[in-house]
Amino acid sequence: PGRIRIHHLQQAKDTGTHFAMLTAYDQYAAAVFDEAGIEVLLVGDSAANNVLGHATTLPITLDEMILFSRSVSRASHRALVVADLPFGSYEVSPQQAVESSVRLLKEGLVHAVKMEGGADYADTVRAVVRAGIPVMAHVGFTPQSEHALGGYRVQGRGEASQRIVDDAVALAEAGAFCVLMEMVPAETAGAVEAAVRVPTIGIGAGPGTTGQVLVWQDMAGLRGGRQARFVKQYADLRTTLSDAARAYADDVRGGTFPGPEHTF
Ligand code: KIV
Ligand code: NA
Image (cartoon, rainbow, N blue to C red; front, side, top):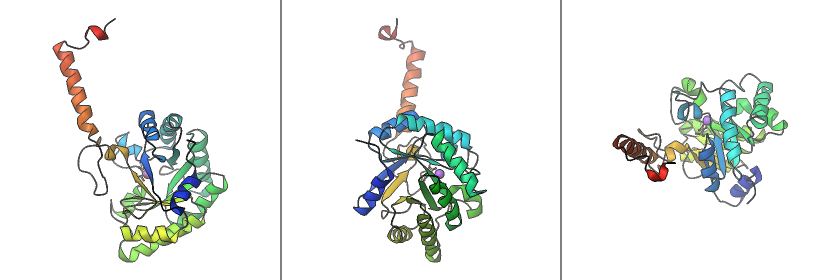
């Protein structure tokens, strides 16, 4: 099958079907998810947390995002590959956003960029779209603003619901091909899905969006520790990998690895 394109995601919305997105930061995860039929791979700035070991997404640089993006893009053949514009790479001006987005496509080899921010960023989205670069908007809880938002908190509750809808509508009108919502009540997400023509993607946004996204190490149980409420864990890679490492070390210490079959 050919490459997933943005019109295929629109088709999903128009026909009432769903698609799946996972983060990926390296070639093996990308290849496995691509072969498994995951429609969209997100080179998230969550690589800051999940690969580089930072406490927030803020420290990751555009150069680092480009490195991860290249690995994912080279290893995937069918998925649409989207990369995050990291903190500090787009806020200054539409020009800065275009320059950073061009680098993510030209050097990172991705097909689209994702940008955090509400209606205030409509002009910035317009500028990037004008450059021929598809933009996925990211509203609701936006981790790059966690200090301004006062930590990981559900956004768009009660009265604040309308603001999320207004943000999504403004960004879709500016040309975003998709609106991602993080940690918003299902009712708010449903209102957004109904208010915009383009597909929406949810993480902690309930079942009413066209697509869903999870961080792969959460989904596959590699991260360990307490999971957020919105995560469903489909595997226990941390235990699998830990058992493998222990078994290997036992073999080495016991002198049973390498065996004759591993020896020249
Ligand atoms: O960086 C990321 O992983 C994300 C998703 C959680 C949406 O932006
Ligand atoms: Na992100």
